[in-house]
Length: 235
Ligand SMILES: *Cc1c(COP(=O)(O)O)cnc(C)c1O
Image 1 (tube, helix red, strand yellow):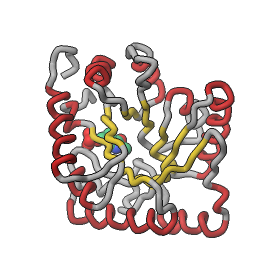
Image 2 (cartoon, helix red, strand yellow):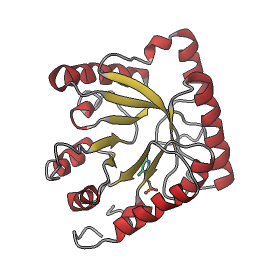
Image 3 (cartoon, helix red, strand yellow):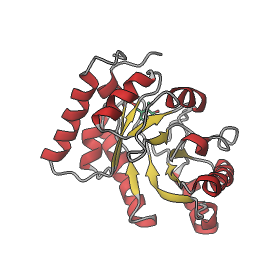
């Protein structure tokens, strides 16, 4: 799947994009999730004309991204997926434009500092999404519980930091780990209602390989699709 001459990821991407077009959904971004795959795959899709890519590990992403040949007039846009942690937050903006997994105010404060530093040096902004855990599963996948989010937004809304180099762009969530599509649909619908209430113009990052069609029905503006495009992950 990683061989540069294998075009099946392009075909899979085209199929998803044409589904979106045929059904007249309007999305902002389709993030192709390339974690565990080599930079050849990123290069293949970038050369085809795709620009948004998602990774979940800082070190792995950094090592890959230096190899990708990018045209100055068509910058690659990088998305960090997975829980933002206080330990890694200060490095994330160095190589990521978007951060999807903000589930901790403490980590967000660290991210804000690092984003300011990057902005001062490069004038490039960092964008983030607040991740909500609406399944209430105790998983390592991160996200704030809704009551935690609502408590903060009502009592200390300035915790959701924004400055010239950092912008809060919306919400992110994931369906239940057992893949139940009825529950997934309820959760996506709930996230949309939350978005409408607290950040009406915000993005909705929801929908992965197994549930992106449901996410589109429920108003997703950002899809994060890995295996349905890339094939199975390496580990
Ligand atoms: C890995 C990952 C994806 C992509 O998952 P697929 O099921 O391969 O499409 C999407 N979002 C997050 C947060 C991920 O970690």
